[in-house]
Image (tube, rainbow, N blue to C red; front, side):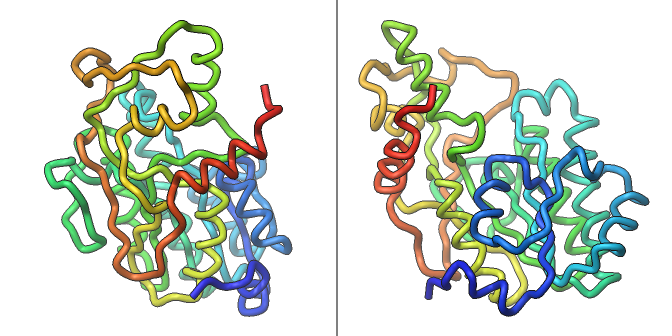
Length: 278
């Protein structure tokens, strides 16, 4: 089912990537080489009038929104920013897309679920337990209210070459500490941003709706860390308190498209390409 990286460019002649300066945005730019790239310095997506003017001027036929406020604990400290960026802004983007007749691809999160089930399919009812998840759910709802021609891709535990992520954080701590505590009672699916970007090219051609896209394989944060750091030790969430409550299980099940490769294989590629990165 996988599409070549250039296949979408043949169908969509004018692609706009929002959030192009972020970790996922960098990889999307590589997968969609002819796209117009827009970062936060180019457009404040929380400014409704500016969003409308920018998209009406660009006249894209496909908009990929990778812009988000992803600091989960930071969202608890600043819910106003979280709901503006993750909740209201996607609605502004969707309204503008609808006006120009563009298809919208938007990324959401496993944290729209409460973790009371061991796994979640696309049709399961969201019940977020933190501000980040609630703000992302509002974004989904606002998009669905404004347009029909949308693709919402829920994903989880992103790591990539162009931004701060769990892998690099643990690798740094591993070099500077005798041991590092990592929680073993939060379970999900790590996802490599380049694999997600490539899959986005395929899903761009799919029917509208919600899609779950992660690398294959389920693990805890501790098991994930053990794959690349030898000196991690397990702990519980109670032993490692954070501002935002995290779901115990946020395993997304993809029922609509072909699966991605296992996260261990993706991690090996990532480590091979970042081995010399400080």
